[in-house]
Length: 92
Image (cartoon, rainbow, N blue to C red):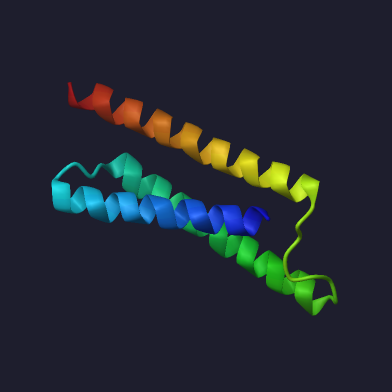
């Protein structure tokens, strides 16, 4: 489940980044967070494939994996907040 949640966050931040590019409000914080989520999605994809090669299920849809997904999303949003705050304070 954390794989699906991470991919959804990566797609959402990518959409925000390219929408912001057209509107003129894209930021380095948004770009960095987008890359972080894509990196996490790639890491979880490799983990899912490795588990499948070991004979396990491709996706883990357990309670613990869902909680891990929420922790990943929360950490990414926290990082985005810190990056945004740093960006705003350094421009003033």
